[in-house]
Image (tube, rainbow, N blue to C red; front, top):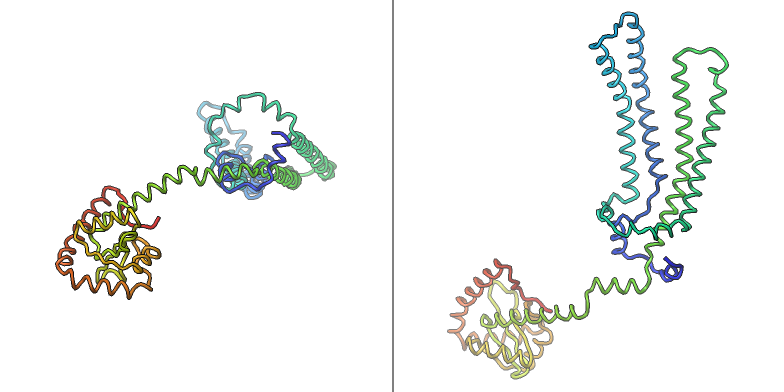
Length: 384
């Protein structure tokens, strides 16, 4: 990546960019942090199990040395002795193995946020291209990693020198000691070396992880153009959005026209607007807008109303207000309650035979709607 490309990336990475990077395994990771966790797990396992391990070794040693003069090397006795030694080694090493495995999992989980990265395991042909690998040899991150490795080498050398210098002053090098003292000496030497090594590598791992965090964040930075393109991809192309809106309008019109035959009344302008209303006592809290339209759609609503015998009332101000403020599938605005109540009261008096048949018509429409729902056809009315 050129410096010019880096300079153009001035924006913080979006959530989508961070999620995709995590899925592809592009997150800050430090091998030194992994090593520190494993060493810490080993140190903890040794601290808790060294007593029981020493007792196991002591018991086996006593058993072997006290019976050394009576033991006969035979084909059936050798496997038994080897099995005892292997079981003892297993008991000693099992806590160490379990602790290091848990520590390694914890280190990887903390760096990845305990998130899986399935795409990181896929085959990528570009990894076989030697040119990017050759270019990475001259990247400044190589120098940083080389410096970190040099720090580790110096740290391990200084720790070995300081531990050896301290332990060489032990009395066992200048005076006779008991055999059991050798075990205590080895325990102190192990603790001294591991504790200092973990402390030194912990500081180096912190520096390494901070650099990897900074490097990964810089690589995920985005340019303003990339953010615009991502926004377009998330929103979809304008043509696709227009097509979806047209489809939604056609679906809404189809639903509205299908509901007109079950309306109580159609309020008209009389030519420009038409609004179909329904009110079922005990079900609706207020009259509900079933359909509304202007010009061509208004003509279709009125034609369906006439075909099915739906009462039509001409009221220009109410029709305009219902079309402007009413929403399909929702109750009418509260300001229009009184005007619509007068219209409904009139049609209830003058079209009694229609309302006698309307109950059966609505039951049939409800059954049809249930059948469509069972087939997965969307039927609820909603404003687009």
